[in-house]
Image 1 (cartoon, one colour):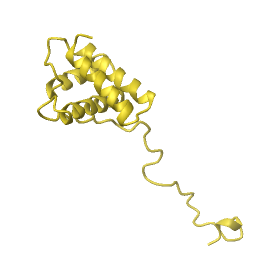
Image 2 (cartoon, helix red, strand yellow):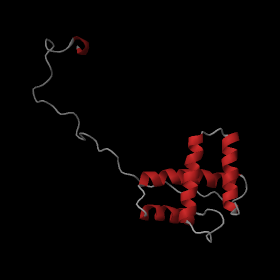
Image 3 (cartoon, rainbow, N blue to C red):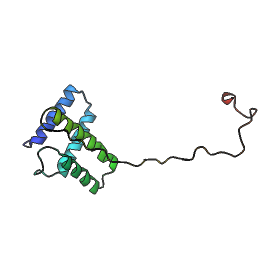
Image 4 (cartoon, helix red, strand yellow):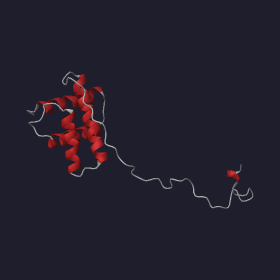
Length: 133
């Protein structure tokens, strides 16, 4: 591992494992996000993630057809790494990219409220006992 950013990332993972007690699934999530970042951003870019490189990362993900929700998971992982870089003194300022706006996955079934039968309230003699007023 001759890349200084990759070395810092491995240190980040080690600290997350032993000091924050994150799960193996979370570590896998961090690795996938970082691997995607390294794939999208050339090696001759800034040595540490910047707002511009993170924005370029998201743009390249979206160009590849990655859904916004998936981009957001990568952004959250990279934001955690950037926060760690700042807290540990490796980066002069904290870089945080906001999540993408995502539309509702499932539209509301009936945005106007419940459908009325138009016949008024149910008479008590027809109402089940547990629904009595």
